[in-house]
Amino acid sequence: MAASQTATPKRFTKLKRAWAVLSSPRQQPIIYAEIALLVLGGLALLPGGFDYQGYFHRLAQGCEACTYNPYFSEWFMFPLGVFAWRVGYLVLCGLTMAIAYWSARRLGGKPFVVLTSPTFLWILWLGQIDIIAAFGLAIAWWNTQRGKPIWVGLGLLMMATKPQLAAFAIIALVLWNGWKSLIIPAAGAALSFVIYGLDWPVRWLSYTPQTMFAGDAWFYIAPTWLLIGLLGVFFIKGRQHQLQYVIAATLAGAPYLGAYSFFTLTLFPLRWWEILVAYAPFAMMGITGDQWWLGLLLAQPLMVMGRLLYENYRPLVLPKTASAEQT
Image 1 (tube, rainbow, N blue to C red):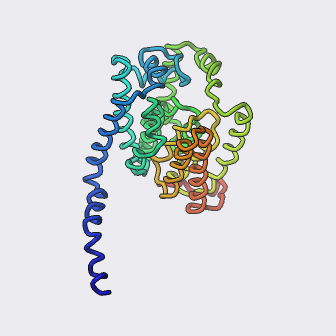
Image 2: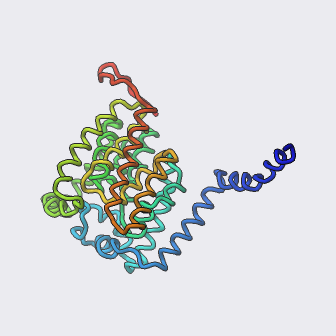
Image 3: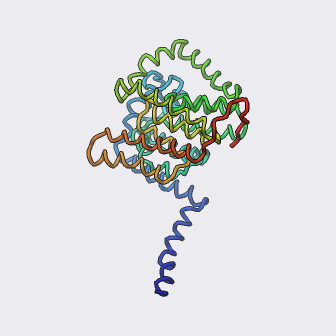
């Protein structure tokens, strides 16, 4: 019995050392870069990039009405327009992985969770540009922490490229940072009217509803649930927790979001069960071939909302007696 007790630690010594290396702050960027290069190599060999080829490469080349994103999204894509679509797609994937690493560090998440999440791998496979809004979210939060409201506005402008994902987060960030955070977005709006015409929002909205993927009933049910779910943010203490809750509630209720947009939640701190639950829909879809299993992705933001309310609950305080919370 004594021999087995002394042998057990030795049996796991190498495993513990390997885990220590993987957990080392110095080693993590190197390991992340190595895995990212492997993923990028796989993407170079596989026939992905369908959305980038069909929509976003054209956007990068100046066709602002070729996607469902607001016209000014072109400003963040035009450098990729100099490349052939396949090269531009791979460059976008490389930038997406690099930005995801930085954004997760700013928002409190774990970069490896992001990189290995099925929803993140999905945006890489398709060549989607949700990373622009996610990057803006990280920039806005980082500058909120630094007390630089003007630069928060740069993040807000980037977040506005995906308004159905970021609208309520934008409202929260503006309330926290004041009118100075609107300087850059206001300048961007004025420039967009000069370039695209005063009626470009009307023209954009005329075809944007085509992005709805879940049927007419969901168009009415989802926003109602979203607004009800958002009420929970008033019972949560801590701005970072409130921001995560707003994103989770939006993912759970916005009617125009693709399932791949759920990767945004992995940029924030998550519990292990909240990470694992996102794999189940893809496993079931692979087994059955039925895409409706993706509806199970709603479990992840709902679990996050419940956990944030449980761990960070505060009684509702009237604005006159509430003190400004700092993170």
